Each structure stands twice: as structure tokens, then as C-alpha cells.
Image (cartoon, rainbow, N blue to C red):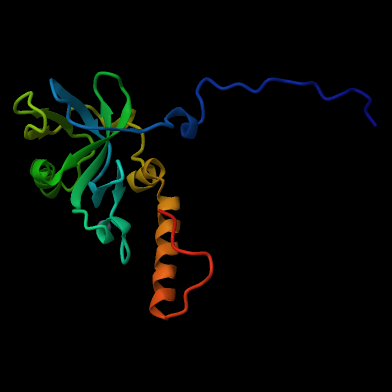
Amino acid sequence: MDPTPTPITIPSAARPADADLRTSYRIVRTPQIGELTGMIISHEIYGCETHYHRGRTRPHTEPICEACDEGLGKRWQGFLAILLTKTRDLALFEFTAAAAAPLVEYYEHNRGLEGAVIRAYRTTAKANARVVIRIERGDTDLFHCPPPPDVATLLARIWGVDRLIQHEQHRAELARQNRDGNPQPGGPDRP
Ligand SMILES: [Zn+2]
């Protein structure tokens, strides 16, 4: 047997693994003042109904939804992965149905949103002023653009969807037991 011990080395790389390079997508909205500009990375919009429930946004779930059961309204929200022009940061751009028309039209006309340049601003500086979205074909080639992320997965992480689904499953199970007239010990659902 060779008595020479294996030399210890330090593996190195000029760039981190892709998964580590861009870990924290944050949600960005149209600013109150000024404008948001970026390049769209997503192929299409990811949208879902959401509630503002107990101080935070949550997705509407089916067939059971605690926010609906509490009588809260829901509204559609759309999301796109974008590369912010100023900071070169990746972000999820959030927008409402009222502002989505230019994006929908562009998608239908061009069969995809990736590579398009987006500008979003408000008509006045007042809170909740109308959002205007402008979109045009970008001349930036997509070569330098990261691959499109799975927006649903990113949102699931941000919203804590695993726990939410567990919670709703638990509520569904309690509802089923109550319906069957066979309540289990352990009392009512936690608030
Ligand atoms: Zn709901």
C-alpha cells in the first residue's frame, strides 16, 4: 500500500453553481415615483387569484380556502420574471389585471414575452394611482439572459405554500369529519 497520504486540495471555480448564483428572487411592484424598467425572462405570465389574509398575501386554493370561508374577496395577480435594468437583479414583477392588457396582447402577437423590454410607472404620485405598463421588443439578445425560472416554485417558496396546503388539508379533513358527524378528539382547528 502506498504510504503517501492523499494531498488535500481546494476545489475552485470562477463562478458559483447556477443554483447558488441567483437564489433570492424578490417581488417588485410598480414604484410610486419613477419607473421600473427591465427585460422579461419569462415566456408567459404566471397568474393566480390571491387574497390579502391576516396581513399577508396568499393564493386562493380550491376546493377549500380559509380566506374565502372568512368572506374575503380575491383578485387576480400576474407575475413575470424580469431582469431589472438598473441593478441587473432578477425579480418577480407583480401586476394587477387592470395593468395586464399590454402584456397579454404582446404575448398573443409575439407568441412569447421573453426578451421584451418592460416599463411600468404610475400616472400620478398618489397612492394606488393607475399603473401603466409599456412593452416593446428588446434588441438585447437573450444570450446573456439566465434561463427562465419556474415562477410558481419561486412564489410557493415566498408564500410558504407547503404549509398553506397542509393547513388547508387539515381544515378539509376536519370539515369532512364534522359532516360525517364523527368529530375527532383534539378540538377545533388552530386559528
Ligand atoms: Zn379563496
